[in-house]
Length: 291
Image 1 (cartoon, rainbow, N blue to C red):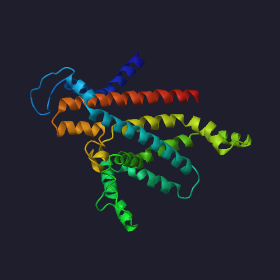
Image 2 (cartoon, one colour; image 1 turned 60 degrees about the vertical axis):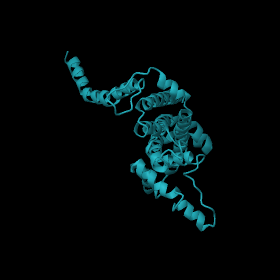
Image 3 (cartoon, rainbow, N blue to C red; image 1 turned 135 degrees about the vertical axis):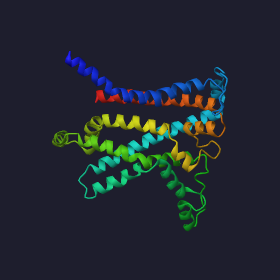
């Protein structure tokens, strides 16, 4: 009886967190689904329910598929780069280097900077007028490049900036994973005459699968909901060329006063993030078991 009372009292400790989640996450999400069936402008006290009209409009809107494509590029592109570069940094800094601590600090430092501020820092590098990149081009006698104004180039710049800022998170997680691997495995492999690649493929990579799972899921979610960096670098332009679903939804609500349609885009964005992140989680969790 005392054990049951103690266990039941522990459940009450979850109550504040549950209330916060319900109030600030679950309720707004469910209310957003309700609003997606209306023509609300975001400010009026009255609105009409229009059924599936907003969803029909969304799937017929070419801008929807453009921002979905960009969102997938930001999410998947950032995830691949952050994991490859982060793992490379972790493998390098797991060695006994003299400047190891300083290098780790430098790589992780961008993480603590606001993404909006980081975006503006890189904006002054890539800006057409007075940007550091074009100053270098002019100094070399080359023509300036309007990198942020190029629809074919600026989405990749956004991926690069997002990767540059958050690669330190991936590095730290991989370092923790590497340091948890027993040296006995590598000593046994050395006795068997295994090469560096064979040790990485058969020891390091399988035992890093929990770290890979964490990084992949976190990077995918962060990349798919990218907002601040886009606002700072291009504000979604030119036109909608570099819009993500987050920035597109923001513009629909505040610039076009089309809250019902913005909520519809939000529902689609939530579904995309849920499906991709859960698929990644189940896939890499299965790899952990196989390893």
